[in-house]
Structures are given as structure tokens and as C-alpha cells.
Length: 104
Image (cartoon, rainbow, N blue to C red; front, side, top):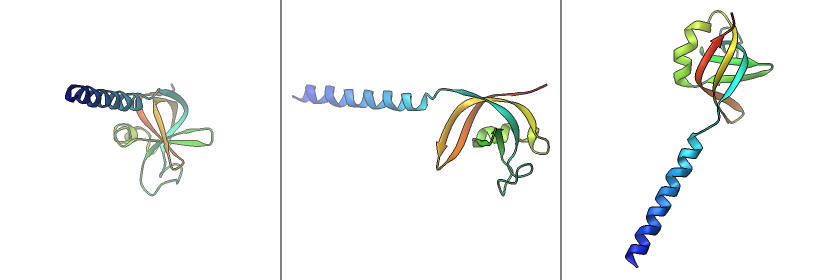
């Protein structure tokens, strides 16, 4: 009886870890548009923050990506593409950036 209980608990733990791993494994998207500052260029934020504007939609860079790429686009918007995983919370789309390419 104890062995069956241990096997059952172990199975639940393994399945939980697999579910969490699958949740973190989001498909990456490639967005093409204007990479710019939400404050300085667009007036959409009280603080500087990197975004990519695709048509009429803004995708906000996550915290780490914002720090890494903001200096490139704060005072001058650049056309380009951003690859990463997108999440949406409360109507705000955030992208965890894996790659940025600026148009030449």
C-alpha cells in the first residue's frame, strides 16, 4: 500500500514538472515594425521603455530586454524585427526578446 502511494505521488510530481516546462516553452514570434521608446517617441509611458510598434499595436520589451536594447532606440526610432516569446496580460503585450535585427 505504501509503495503504491509513493508511486502515485511520484507520478503527480513528474506530471506537474512536465506541465510547468510546457508552459515555459512558448513559441517564438518574429515581429516587424518600428523599435522605439514608449516615452520619448510615442508619449505612451511616464518612463523610458523599449517597444516595437507593429501597425497600431505596441509590444513592450520585458525588463531584461529593455535594459539591453534601450540605448539603441531611445532618441531615434529604428525599423527592424524582434524575435521572442509574447505574453499578454491585462491587454498589454510583452515580448521576451531573443533577437533584434535593425533594417539597413
